[in-house]
Image: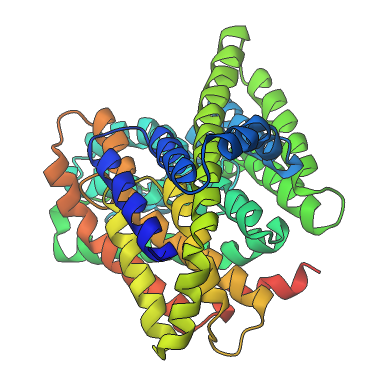
Length: 439
């Protein structure tokens, strides 16, 4: 039996486990172990397992994951989410749909110091939903805007998912952060345009808020200086050559912690932030271990190499292969979270992409371009039914709004996502423009 056949059988078993609601980390771990035993026996598996966890968790770059998560926890407890939303609302809240657009803008700002879409959606949902309700915004528009805006948490650097992609593909984290910046800004602008067009078509969906005097606007803008300062320290420190990404994450976390204490965070809040970061990190690291075991099994089957060779010899146009991969991501997004998709698919899809020619890109540029493209498509999965993790989070906060209502409101935002993906496919410089300045 060929490697592709064996890998396909066990991949099918993995899908069955996921359908039975077995956690993704356990599903990948069990499938990988069973496949490994089938091909090589128990002794080689046990020999691998005794060093697998240490080999994975001792990677220095992985330390940025808990640091970025903790930085986001400190930022939310330091009142930065409220300050961001207040500043954005004071500037554009008096336009039709302006408060929903302000929520999207605040999500983009919070994503710049958080790195997690789920945390961004949860934090900004708590801040913005009461104001959207007070102004009688359409439930579909308000919840959909926050769910879509939450996806900016992994698009605007720093991004936890990009860190994992960089480690899996051995790419430069700094270059990937630079590549994500313009697509992230484009995503935020696209969501705001969707809201503006929606409110023009349905004026009652997004009533205009109160116009704030300039004195209030200036005070609101002054309140967000810590966000800008932390962003400049983290991202500017990386590209200025002062810090490595890990060092920058450490400095940013300390700065966010000091700010949170200054804003009133006490010992209980500190412990909540630490526990929250620890729980999220443990979940991510367990998924990483499960993916490692599964990927070692797939390497034994030679499935990724055989698939890459088959694609290269098939004569299929590279764009056909790429759009097939994008389609698979969209379907996987209906049942899996973003990190799990990256860990499960990159070992299979990455060799395929690297063996094809796209617009004459060299190997490094192609790897970075595909990473941003995969990140964007994976981000769409956060708001697609039936899983749509961001939708579940927002609806847990807006208990009076049905899931069906929110998913109906999501449709225009998905159209914006589709347009952005097509633009990035045909115009790689959107993601590669800033990379040339990162050294």
